[in-house]
Image (cartoon, rainbow, N blue to C red):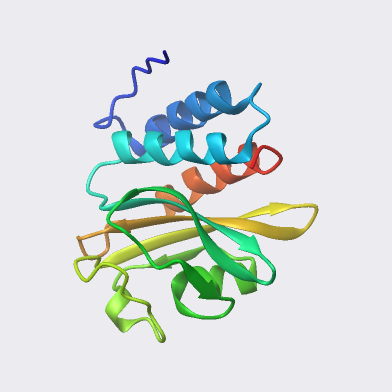
Length: 160
């Protein structure tokens, strides 16, 4: 059993540093990608305040396919270039969206989601997955959140 003492009320830099350490501890010796994604999705769900979905979409045969997550049932397949996740996968760039309803081509898997942060996970210069965070609150995510999840993506790139 793993027990982590992550303070969700800590300043974001500390919170993400602890989340990255916890993810590193959970995934460092585990070769199974699905197990690693599942544990990371659970960590994000447990310790990030004001989120209603945390998880992964994996690149499979040129499109995004739902991976391990926490939250309501979600869209299963997303084409590259479609919605926030597909845009992140196609561009290889983090997507920080304060109001998803204003995002062209947004895919509403959960109608209560208002903001979203999607970070590509890249291995050898290729996107292999995206980390997707949704919140019911407008402008929930900021640059500190993006940097924290980008650190996480770097740590896990060879483990998923």
